[in-house]
Image (cartoon, rainbow, N blue to C red; front, side, top):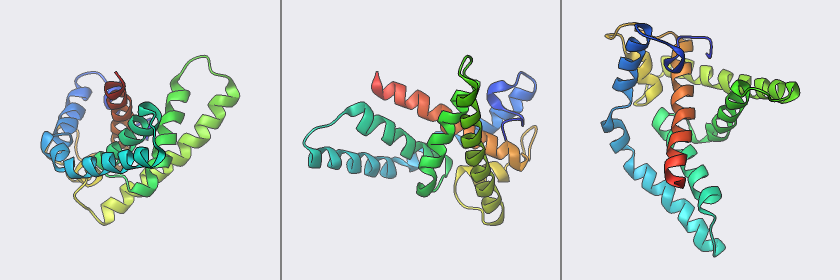
Amino acid sequence: PGAQRNLLLSDPPGHDGLRAVANRVMRGQRINALQPAMRAIAEDLVDAFVADGRADLVAQFSHVYVRRVMAKVVGLPDADVECASAGAVDLHALITPGLPTEVKLAAAQGYRRYSDRIMELVEERRANPGDDMFSELIRIDDLPGTPLTAAEVGTFVQVFFGAGIETTRDAINS
């Protein structure tokens, strides 16, 4: 999916259509509907602190919380959170200059597993749409540049997941 039209790597006028799609799927209503799930995730993590008797807010809360919440936002199954998290790290390694070749090769292999899984999920949602971001990205057909290809849907999900982790985690940690 990384080679497809990409919100982060495009310029107008192509960016404008992709931005309209992003605005549609990331509306406040979607996020507000997830508040009970966000609260439940936070409570689970805090309960673990109580059991341990201490907490490292960054390691035990913000990193875990953000990944689980962003998975809910984009519509990833709970079982895919670790794969997606590792894939986001692998993608970051791929675009980071100066890393050794062996690190980049390992990252490419990991990212490929993630990308393949995202494409499986896109196809699952095409066959059985739900009330999630994957399905909405597939359904949108009234904006410039839509409908999106399966690879473009996969790219959107990857961009939202990765960018959401970074910005939200950094906001919590600051």
